Structures are given as C-alpha cells and as structure tokens.
Length: 128
Image 1 (cartoon, rainbow, N blue to C red):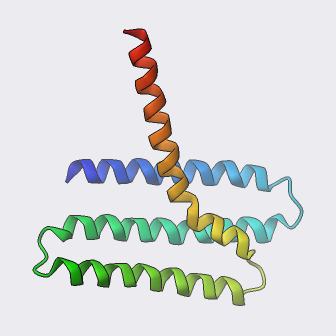
Image 2: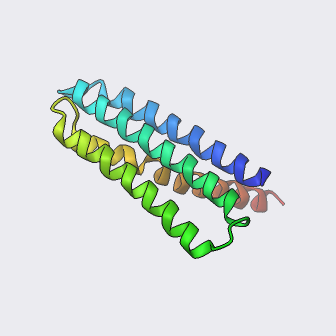
C-alpha cells in the first residue's frame, strides 16, 4: 500500500511540474488568461480523479463484489470529467483545448516518469 501511495504522490508532483512548465510557456501566447485558466482547471480535475483512482485501488481488495465496485468507481470519475468539461464549454473564459490538455497531464507525467526511470536504469547498466 505504501508503494501505491508513494507512486501516486510522485505522479502528482510530476503533473504539477509539467503544469508549471506549460504555464510558463503559456505566458508568451496570446489569450493566455483563457489558456492558463483551462490548463489549471483541467489539471486540478485530473489530479482529483487520479486521487480517487488511488483510493479505489486501495479499497479494491476489501470489496465484496470487485467488478461492480470497479464499474461504480469508473462511472464516478467519468461523471466528474463530464461535469468539468461541460462547465468549461459553457464558461467563456476557459479554453476547451487547454482543459483537455490538463486532463491528460497525469497520463503524460506517468509516461515521463516511466521513461525517465528506464533511462536511469539503462545508464546504471552501462556504468557496471
């Protein structure tokens, strides 16, 4: 369980690092207010959903009916994404594409983390 918590915390940290980098890059673009608002909004929703996924993984082993449990948890997360995107579409001060990019930031952080660890292991093998 501690491995799950540590891994999730590292992914959330990497997500916020990527968000910071994208925010710095977004400062040089026109319409940066809408872009940055959408990026931050999408990232916060994605991190919330990632934390809900972490909690669901920890509770999974204690569930009496795991298939139904997973289905309900997945529907909760999809509902949150749907409500968040609907709010973003209806709100004029939020860029929709940047909200979608914010939704994808935890996934990008996971791939970045895996790629980074793989390269570190490869370098350690070359040194030996």
